[in-house]
Length: 271
Image (cartoon, rainbow, N blue to C red; front, side, top):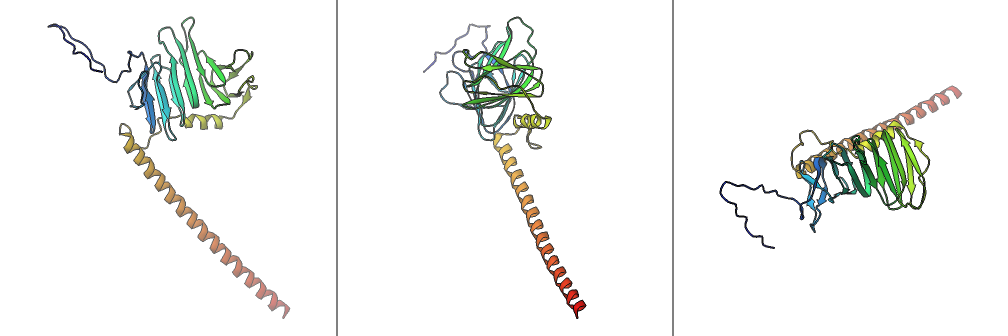
């Protein structure tokens, strides 16, 4: 659709903003880190676009990551959303002033570091296909699947219930605890998990682990470095396997020689 030119009177000016979704989307935050491959579909646009570090994310945007993609979004209030690989997340509701935030996680992993909510009526909720996770200000991880949701609390407290309001009851998680919410069922009892498990989950949602020297470079360069690193690691593993095979062969030969010597000593003694 052609737009009419903007004509300004002498002495006046206008600010033009690029890459803003149709309808004047409300800013929700910025991309602070990303690992290929990932896309964002702005509200009102038919096709997704490549994410850009320091690029804006808007209310109702859908962020998707592929097999290796990870994204970190810094919301306007300072909260962090860390999206793991093979995930889809939508910022369904956001207002930095009144502090009601609603995130929809259709699939995959999301680690949220939520700023303390001070305003009356402020809320932060993550909704999946089976659960609603509510917090006041905390650090937690959600893994969403079609028929169940897993929730881990890293710091603070996390309130977890089934998405179906007819299923009354909730579980309150404290730091180091975990629960599962199956489709159509109450959340399971809070269960303690080891620090090692928590650390592994954090690493799976960390979008800042880039190869040395790749910060600020294009996704293609980062991907090339990653492939090169993987190839180098593969060659190292192959060499290690070859060395192990040679050691096994040498050990077999040594065992055979030892057996021959023992048999010779036994025959000599019998003679």
